[in-house]
Image 1 (spheres, rainbow, N blue to C red):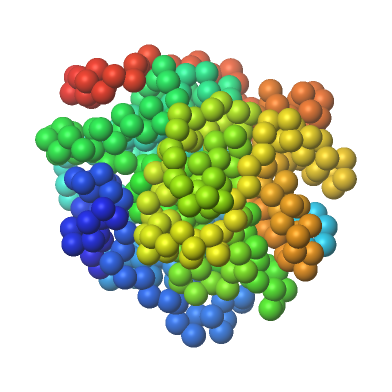
Image 2 (cartoon, rainbow, N blue to C red):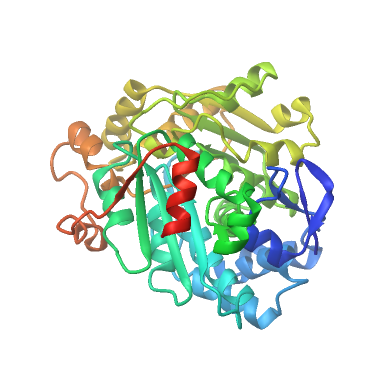
Length: 432
């Protein structure tokens, strides 16, 4: 299969170029030239398939023309070693728990698959692969875990100083080995801009053999479509879900749209954001106005210029009318988020993290207007990753900290300070 740039559909590359170079030279994003609907044979039996069988079918739709079935199946099975269970809080009110992977966040699905696909694409290549990633919280930890001590790779993680939780920061900075963390004196958008600048410098990108682990990379998006289909089959037959997606860079919602493109029956999508409401504003007004991000307690969603918006536009042919007919946007502030954390615990005896809480608020608002709907809120991270917020709202010790997260608390943070200056970042990359 060939993959084209969202900025220039006539610019096409093969799978290896799309995944390993990550970003087209025109600053667009890669999309598959074609994506066939999964066949009738799949949809006749999809509710009876295992999570791994669903994952293989989706991965095959994206990459099957280039990756042999045995290799692809091994990638999927190595990725999906944990579940994504659907928890019912009340009538029509469901939460999809995506935090059962090694770093307790939904990014584990994409990062683990991507590491395996990149390893297959670079087999026999003795050059060092440099993985660049910007993170607003969970992406960096998932990528660090997926690539830690993988031979032939080094990972550089850029994160905004003072804008991730303490435990998230330890996941980025305490592994050592082939993982290097850069603490950027700026926002996530600044981190993302630095990463993009490196890829657009084609000489630098080639010399350092750069690749991206952000959701600008298609290898991150495809595996996230796995759990949309897995979630929908956990509802009663004939009940199409309304997916409510806490959103920052909009890769997760884009993956849901791709699952729908593959044939998944979806009633609607709701994009739920914090104060960084660029996309909800677009869905209301038709005007897209990226702006500097605002810091909130749902830090992984603090994105003012979401890169995957161009993919969303591409999937709807640039039509605002078509997009808003399938996606509603809602936003909520920190006070509302804190109240939701307390309310979910009080009513349902369930601990929900600050990102899932925003999704739950949006799901409740949607059901108030559409009482027969069944909403699935994506719970994207374990609440224990946000102790500063959870302990204030629910009390000390209210959320049990999984052992694999607790062990990080005593580890030393190792991070290199970095400015937002692109020239300084380039010089650091050249000298590393």
